[in-house]
Structure formats: structure tokens, C-alpha cells
Image (tube, rainbow over all chains, first blue to last red; front, top):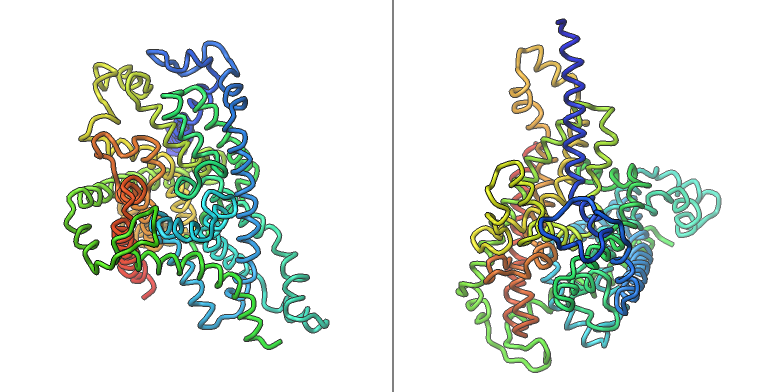
Length: 278
Length: 292
């Protein structure tokens, strides 16, 4: 056997092994999908089976027909959309000057955003509870949006600052030569070229809010409860209703996964570039 | 408009917001920590100085939850680093063909933590957990009932970390992969020419060059693991007998179940300080030397 032949076999083996590894990594989530498609009675059978014997939408019917989950999904969606919009409005202009005008104050500002990312949510949650209570915003969507935005803004700031660093300074200067003010140059010339960066930052802010659990648990009780809280409550209210719980978990997580798959290249870039550039 | 005014105006909204919703609450947190004050009546308060801190530092339940947080974080981070780096090396070995592998591998990144927690609870739980049936089928254990992952007080803190490891190994792998692709090929070639074997090349060339990347992973993931709340909460709510109660959960319980805002604030302040100090140390020790 030649050396090259050996290497080819080695390559095929490595490829096959890598594929096997990666597929087994996805297995737990596939099991969640399979379980949600079983009839409710089969979900807790002993011993468990990986694939459903019969496919049934019973679990999905139950959670979608329930009184709580559809409105919780609506709350989650509204909260996440408002959080995204608010964090973009706040973070994008700040990130622009932080990246393009290096001054002591902008450097300090980015450092502050970085430090904020280290703050444990529970440390902020405790006083936020008190603050929102004083403002009469406990258990309101507005209150939860404010809380979520406080974690989304630092994230959006750091992401956008990295994106803006790729914009040449001349862009703003050229626009100002043509008679724009600094602000007009920012809005009319710089922002349009940043569309994809803004879209990714928006998506990250959205997901941060959509996935958030602790603030929602602390700061909402009846009216503004989000989906993760209601899903978690399947524990106590229904005993261990695994069937509906898996269906709710699928409804809650699948949209995000599909969007991620569609935009995977940009998202993986966004997730990792900050780390690697550091 | 002068440049200076423009900078200030653009920064102002975000600065005001973060001031009101991050800096002010942190101030409030530290302030509350010096009082005896109840969660439901924050207006009624009594100054007690450092008493809450002394209580926190001498409470065995808090000390236990802190120690558990360390065990959980080290266990989770350790396996994430090992698995993540193995996956990254594998991906870089098959280079351009690894696109689909990486896509599938990235999926858990977008799974909400509470879904990951639920899922793993379902895989591990009592009679219906399929993992034990799998282990029994391949002969690693005799009976599916042999390991009680989530109800055995001795191992529960490690069992609840499985979900974390599954969820974030992909982050480590993708960051490490990006780091690996940034290493100049000729450096590794040069080492090969000098007669270094694969292991030596990895140890003496690849690993030192990845130092900043590893630092970032350890800081970001370490801080996240130490902050974990939802993932464990959804699996065990801290049980059995508080044996999976980590520090953030202890603070939550103190504030919500026991209604003790003062003590919860003291613990939360200590938590905040420790996290900032740890992140600072990690930054100075691991990251900076590579810039010299």
C-alpha cells in the first residue's frame, strides 16, 4: 500500500468519524422533536423508545389550546421586539462614536459595557425588582423590556462597535464635504452600509430577550409572563406533563433554530469574531 | 456642531440608560446590603452595617452553594474545553469539508437554556430517562435504575452540568476553530520540518498561539457557568436537599422565598465583586502576556 493510499483511507475515516460525532451531538434535540410527536400517553412509557410508534399532534394541540401558552408566546414576542428596537436605538449611535472617535470617554464607555457583561443577572435582578416596584412597572411588559434592554445594550454596543471599526473614517468626511452635518452623514451615509451588521445585532438582541429566564421569573407574575416561565411551570401545575412540555419546548425553540440555520454564516461570524479579534 | 458635542450627544442616550438601569441598581444593591430590609416592604429598613456580610460569610448554606458553584463551573468548563478543542481540531483536519459539520454542531448554541435544561432532565430523569437505557444497552451499567442522576445528592451537581456542556461545547469549538484557522500554516510546517511530531506541534506551537483565544473562552464561559441559574433551576430547582443549589440560586431563594432583601443584596454584592476580580485576574494572567 502506498503512502498516499493510506492517507486517503485516513481522510475518509476522519470524515466518517467527524460526521458520526456531529450527528450524535444533535441527537438529544432530535429526541425532543420525536418525543413531542408521540401521543401523550406514549411519552412516559417504560422503557422509553427513541422514535414514536405513532405520530400524533396531540401534545401540540394541547399546548396551543391552553389558556396560558399562546398569550405567553405573544408576551415573549412583544418583549423581544421592543427590546431589540430599544437596544438598537440606544446602542448604534453610541457604538458608532465609540468605534470612530477614539477619546478617553468612548474607551471608558466600551470598558463599562464590557464590565456590565460580567455582572451576574441575579445581582442586578434583586435591585431591579425594587426599582420597577417603585416605578409601578412590576409585572408589565414595559418593565421586562427595560430589564432585558439593560443586558442587550452592552451586547449590542460591543457587536456594533466591532462592525463600525470596519467602516472607513472617510465615509463620514466625504458626506460632510457634500454639505451633510455629522448627524446626517451618520444617518444617511454610514447606517445604510451597515445594514447586515445591524441585522445581526438585532437578531442577537432578539434572541437574548427571547431566551431570557431569570428576569422574567423575578419581574413578572401574571400579566406579562413570557413563554419560558409558562413552560417551566408545566412542572408544578400539571405534575410532570412531559408530553405538552416537550411540544411547548419545540414551539419555543424551533423558530430560533430555523432562523439560525438560514443565517448561520453571519451568526457564527458574529459569535466568534469578537473573541478571536481580542 | 463641534466634534466633542457630537460624541457626547451620540453617547448620551445609551449612557443615561445604562446609568439608570445598570449603575443605579448596582448602587442600590450595595446600599441595601447594609440594611435589614424585606423584599415586600423595601421602604421599611434598619441600618445594620456589615452584619449581612458577616451572616453571609459565616452561613454554611451559602458557603456550600459557593463551593458547589466552583465544582459545577470547573466541571462544565473542563469538559467544554476538552470536547470543544477536540471538535475544533477535527474540523480543521477536514478543513473545507467541515462546513456542514460545523453547522450541525452550532445548533445547540441557539437552543434556549431552559429548553436544554428540560431536555436533559428528560434524558436523565428517573424511570423514563433514555440515557440509562442506552448505557444499559451497551453494557456500561447493569440496570437502567443503577444511576439516579438527578436524585442522588452526591452526583447531582455534576449531572446538571451535562446540559451546560451540551449547550456550550459548540461555542468553545467554533471559537477555537476560528482561532486555529488564524494560525499561519508555515509556522506549523516549520515545526514539522524541525522534526516535531503532531503532539509536540500542538503543544509547543498551536497551543501557545491560541493563548488569547483560550483566555477569552475561559473568561466568557467561566463567568457564564458561575452565573448559571435557569439551566439548573429547570432541572432540579436546587434539589435534592439543596444539593444542586448554586450561588445565584441561593441569592434568588433568599430574596424570593425568604424575602430577605438585605441578606440577598449582601450575597449578590459579594458575588459581583468575586466575578469582577476573577475576570480581571484571568485577563491579566492569561491574556496580556501574549501581547508583550
